[in-house]
Amino acid sequence: MSPHISPSENTVGSFVYDALPGRVVFGSGASTGRLAAEVERLGCERVLVVAAEPERELARRLVAPLGDRVAATFEEVRAHVPVEVAQRARAAARDARADGLLCIGGGSTTGTAKAIALEQPLPIVAVPTTYAGSEMTPVWGLTEGRRKTTGRDAAVQPAVVVYDPELTLTLPPEISGPSAMNAMAHCVEAFYAPGANPITSLMAEEGIRALARGVPVAVERPGDLDGRADTLYGAYLAGAAFAVAGSGLHHKICHALGGAFDLPHAQTHTIVLPHVVAYNAPAMPAIAERLDRVLGERGDPAAALYDLAAGIGAPMALADVGLPAGGIDEVLEPILAVVPPSNPRPVDADGLRAVLAGAAAGVRPSAAILNR
Image (cartoon, rainbow, N blue to C red; front, side):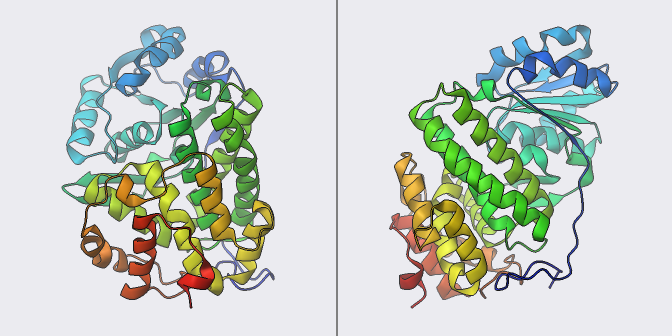
């Protein structure tokens, strides 16, 4: 087992913390007031802009000050970054003779820029418009057929991330809520993933606090800039914690489901999260207590996460977002093959099936029921 903070103790033992490179610029108006200077600071003269078609007008507005530094734009972004899309994006970068990448959008857009950098080590400037958090990590993901593969490579770590809460003001509630819950999943798993340590736990706890405070406001009052700033700040911390701690059972489940059935990324994370917490809670009492404290001291962090998601109108059942009948059986073995041995509780087929069945049906999880 890799050195990490014990899931069952409050004491701090030995640990390893790899501080990742990268620059963060956070603030309202940063995308218009600071972006051009950040690109120039990297010395990029031929930038490939990666932005999905819905962000076309936003991207045009933000890159206008770059003038001739914009060599080309790639808009063929798709969820889970299919290999064929990655190949076209890489070809676009070569054709443009790009010396830098500027991605403007959500996690799929960032993932597309990373797919380019994985082959062509170009510096990435990321301008997130959702709460995905992937802009803070060296993690890449590609989907081929019905299998999603992920990995870590320093080449895909964005050199600069420009966070501007103003860019999230128009994010609709049905995207804001699940996107923030996806960030919450990064925080929760950072407590016990293979590379977890006291530093990632501090970032994760503060991230959960900011997200739990911000996302209800972002959903109920989308134009509230303070709520948006809290949520984006939480998402930044979530990505930073996840980048070091790595992924655990929760992410292995979600990646398998997304790759096999093309389920929506953020919604899948939202649905699965409380069920994984309920499964692991008895084996990580100190972490469960910490989660409960930051979520409001309700005595059951899994139920609290479920209620938070339900309260912001997020989907609660995998069956409602595209999981087909019989889908659980298809992903059991692929998930079991990649579950980290450091998961707080051993995972077998019966336990995993119980987690997936609860998530498929959308029932309110309970650690007491799931683990009896």
